[in-house]
Length: 601
Image (cartoon, rainbow, N blue to C red; front, side):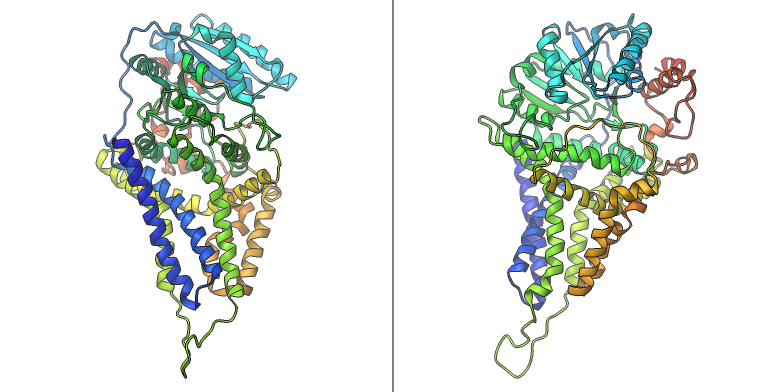
């Protein structure tokens, strides 16, 4: 019942925000008379505002839930008869890097004395023959070092039918009967042994629990862009995810990795169809995770996200270009959800979630259309009528700058307001102590807001292009991920974003010509677009050790990295025959750290 009340109140909040913004917009746009183009602008702005408010609703639901501070329960040895397979799908990955993650997780389980409960299966969809040879060679190294602690398996499919979802489905068909649960990871995933054990305990405790999703935190970020994302997932995401959990209830999310599933439930419920037609809307379902969650819910299984499972990690893109490449695949997969949201038997909330996934990408074109309509409005409306009623005296339009400023503050408030409230709550709960204290947490929050505000107009353009490509029938495929991409040179940034700069210049040019009163507002969007190559280049710079020690985007991982993360860095350093990249705080990680991680644990 409480979940339903939260959902209704959250939707009403979004409608209220959209209504308030519409009222302000009507007052501003009608200063020189109102016509059809103004109605279009109000509609676009209201829809976009409702979407922003929905994100804020997640934050407010999380802020209003308890406890103030989330902590994973301490590890308690719990008897279980369950057998669990840890699945690591790989696709043209660096095997040294990927297998160091597996070695670290096995080491973490061994330190707890429970490694024998878990089997690790590396499921290769690699198409590059040379990479496949390296996988086989490094798997032997991995098995030689860790095979005595946990069962290790490797298989490579001849055809990668169905991509990652097909890879996991193939394992379930051939080997799933051996296991009660499957922990599904990505090639860059890391999980503490205690977290894996707690996930199994929670599955044992609830026979109706079909899928349990953790909240992965980003680690190993090196660039300013990457560290801003790492700070966001560490500082904001627990609150937003807690709100997501409160709203979705038993119909929770699946993000495709760092989750545990009940094998029987998944096998019975999650056979994915191949959509009729050709990609991008036909063929295999790319964003399969949310579809699988909806199918589990349809069959009566509980799908839940538990944000207190904090020993869960992943790596993220370190520059805007790699982020945009990954986002292009997500865009195509999310727009595909329009084909499955009408499937029979789905819960109403699952259909609403699919709508949210679509809106996550349609929102960018809506904002772009609003900007274009605002530029075109003065021309389309023509010369204003200064004598709307017969008489001797003209009625001149009022410039409603106060309304415009209120409108702008309201829209931005939905974006940044929850983040500032999170800082305030962190001061009360003590969470800010892990981020350098409240002053440092506030400074980093403001810096993150400034960074994302500058990059948002650039991402808007990438998402607009992605949506247009999908709608025009272009298939983006499933490109391999470069998980250790370095900084982007200025020439590379220019090659990838010159068209964004050109768009920004053209936008400003038209604004000067047709709507000069809007130029000052448009600069907030167009100026970052004009300087897109420079912003992409600078944000990809590796954050210096000095800046990190000064506390730029500081998280608790800088001072006290998780044992499994430290362990993985040490294994990688040893396998690569030298010193690994620094640990995120400017400290090189050497072989001796492996022993210290064991001692610490």
